[in-house]
Every structure is written in structure tokens, then in C-alpha cells.
Amino acid sequence: MDEAILDAVVVGGGPAGATAATDLARLGRRIVLLDRAGRIKPCGGAIPPRLIRDFAIPDELLVARIRAARMVSPRERAVDMPVGDGFVGMVDRGPFDEWLRNRAALAGAERITGTYLRLTREAGVVTVHYRDAGGAEARLCTRLVIGADGANSAVGRQEIPAHARMRQVFAYHEIVRTPPAGAFEAARCDVYYQGVLSPDFYAWIFPHGDTLSIGTGSARKGFSLRGAVGRLRAATGLDRGETLRREGAPLPLKPLSRFDNGRDVLLTGDAAGLVAPASGEGIYYAMVGGRLAAEAGHAFLTTGDARALAQARRRFLKAHGRVFWILRLMQTVWYRNDGLRERFVSICRDPDVQSLTWDAYMNKELVRARPAAHARIFFKDLAHLFRWVSP
Image (cartoon, rainbow, N blue to C red; front, side, top):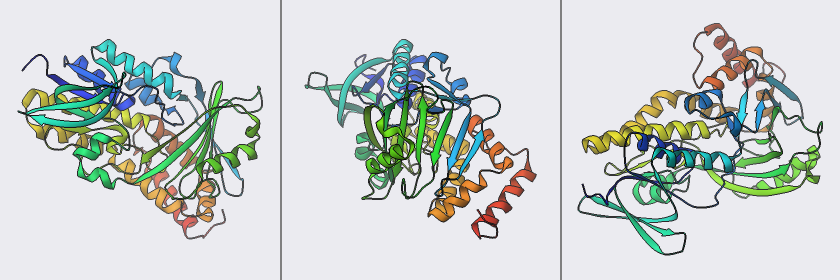
């Protein structure tokens, strides 16, 4: 193979792309990580202990440690869910993503700042065309392209026909300077299940140390996300705080039916739809997806068999497909209207619900060791769904 031909070009330097580039570089592959400058994705920034452990995230990247979540119903009823032992870490996506990109460079990946344009092919080699930082068009020749360029992936739109049908929710948040001490709980995430703030998702206030992320999301066209955040800020007294920046981006609602083109392109992260339904959690699943993409890409580069690329999707769904299915069902059932949201928040008072929810979130595994608790939750869900009990 000509030395000018890379093993892989990773398009997009968020958690998925940076992880894929890091892992492939550590496997001895010649990698370029192509990323646009200055992009910060709107994100609550929560990372579970499983992510911190599996991906060796240092303490200095954590801007807060969350020890409880508060669920707020349409009637303003609040249910606190303490984490128990341990904590949920919070990160700021700007510094966090840059640290991940730097780790990829330290592993041996070459970083290039530029904007992806298109792919072309000749004699079994794929060429990535991009616009460099100076505005000129440039090219990279490679054997494999990993598209980690977000829900509106330009790589995906060109190479994966199903990508054009990807269902999305749009997320928007405002980063606000944290008010004086005592005005807001620094170790608690507040989640609002109220139709006025989101007709089909939820709104949030997440502490990030010196700042707060105040946001919401919806797939409903015409719903004013900025207006909803304004209402939430006014209701909580945060409208008087200094707004440092505003950010918005689409989030996928479901993994794609195919992550690869059967030839030389593999998607991961948001580009492949790896965001959890109901919660919108994406950082952990993006990094897992990036790792699986690297493993599948390495197998493809070793064998030359493009069928190896499909293992990234198979392995992701084997590990997390059931959780995604349950969360999608939960969102479909409980997020439909404020009456159901009221009952959903009421269910969150249950100790079994709280314990199993945190166990599953913190460790990213369904808890199977307590069948009696699962049975109790099932029947309580039915009772609320059919209104046999009051919320």
C-alpha cells in the first residue's frame, strides 16, 4: 500500500470520532482525525461511572459530581431520586471533547482542522475532499472512512441511504453563570416533565460548577425551544443570570438499520443514531460506538473483507439494543401528555424504581438479579397507566 494512503480518516472529533481515532492509532493504524474548529454540541454533560472507568477519564475534567436527580411533574410536584453510593460526573463539552481529541493525537492520530465536503473513489482507494482552515480544498486518500460527524452527517447522507430517513429531536440549551452560593443545588440535576416546556421530551437544569446548562428538546415542528427555556429560566429565577452562550443541534431518535455502506464507510456516534431514547443520553453510547467502530475497522483493514464493518452495529445492539427498546417504549407510553407525565413522575417515588434506575444507568446494564422488584414495578406501571391509582 502506498505510504500516502492512510488506513482511516475519521470525520468528526466528538466523543465517538475521537475514541475511534484513539483506538485505531493505538492498534498501529495510520489515522487522520478531521474536525471542524469551534463546534460545541449542546449537551447536559452527564457521564456515568461506567464511562469514567472504561475510558479512563481523569478527575480534572469533572466540573460537578451529581448525587441526586429531581423529577418535576406538570403540577410542579417534585420527586428526589438520590444516587446513593457514588456519583454521576458532569463535564463541559468544549474542554472534554478537546481533551479526547488531544488523547487521539498522543496515541498517534494526526489532527487536521477542516470541513468535510465529499468522497470520491478510484482504483479501490477512497478520497476525502475537505476545505482546510485557509479555505482551500484539500484531499486525503484512505482505505476507510469513519463518519462521526453528527446527526446531520454529511458522510451518512452521501453513503448510507437510510440516513435520509433518520428521525430526530432538536435540542437547545443556554449556558448560564451559576448564581451565588445557596441559590441552586450544585449536586442535583433537575428534570422537568411538563408539556409547556417540551411536548414530547423533557427540559433540564444541570449544574456544571461555575455554570448551568438549561435546556429542552422536541421533535415537534413549530415548538419554540428558546421560548420554553425562557419560561423555565423565569420560573426558577435564572432569567436574571448572565447567559454565556446558546447552542442547538439535532439528536437522533433511533439507531440506523445499517451503519456501513458494505464497502469502505462506517458511521458511529450520533451519525449512526446512538442516542438513548427517553433520556437523550449520548456521550457514553458515542464512546462505546467509537470503540466498536475502531474494532470493526481494524478487522476490515486486516482482512480486506468489508463484511467486518457490520460487526459494529451487531455488537452495539447486542449490548444495548434491549435498553434502547425499553427506553423507546417508555417515551412512547409516558411522554404523550401531561396526565401521563404526572403519573410517570409519581412512579419515580417508588424505591424499587429508583434503585433499579440508578443501577442500570450507573453500570449500563439491565439489573436481572431482582425479579421481584421488576414484577412490582411492572404492576405499578399498569396501575398508573390504566388510572387504577391516583398520581
